[in-house]
Image 1: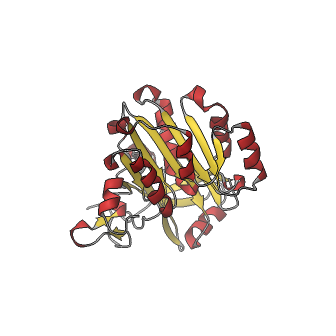
Image 2: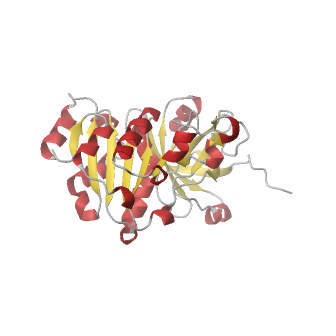
Image 3: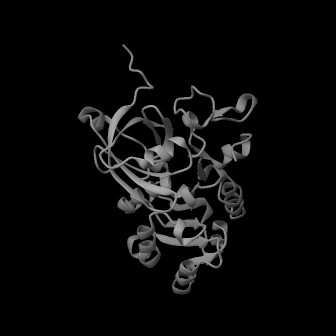
Length: 293
């Protein structure tokens, strides 16, 4: 008999930590030993988390694969399923399906500069690339990370990124931070201390602070949909080829296997399924697929 693709595997919540007013960090432990040993994922892929009697929702895995049985997620409360998941205490059980999607072409990017551009919750899947590239530092050239937030209180993985802001060069990453509220006191203090790395404005303004070698750089973008347009324009102005600009449409996923049709974009002969053909696409794909950005 063929395995039911909709049948989830059980996992236990071993960590449920509040990061902001809206987001929690969740760590799941797969219970079945065989499932855990066979569970391999590419960075940028996603899983489906379900609660019996409530429903399921897709989430990007936000860490590189370094511990068997464990999966790290960043979940924003915003709907029936996500709210129910975040109410669960440590030790509670959830269902897991996946992994799904294509992930980032890490092998293809070797030997190049990496520019990671994240906005808000979009930092979750990019965190996994950052972890991997720093652990495998010799495989990549310059690593630069742009992170755009609204206020200091909405900053995810705050301790990690504050550490990079203060001493990222030592670990091999140039970290830059932008914030949208010009009156945010904590962000103003950061800007006063790191004036070359922190500034008020949208994340695309950070391009004013650094130079890019267009033919030697891969840019990876994840954030609100409006961000893709403006960051893409900045990269295009700097002659970064559209096929070397990668975007993750991690907010556009649904069932994971292309059955529900809710993630379809494009028209005519250029129809794409975000959950099967993505969630990682190139900027060239975005320019030639209706409704992608």
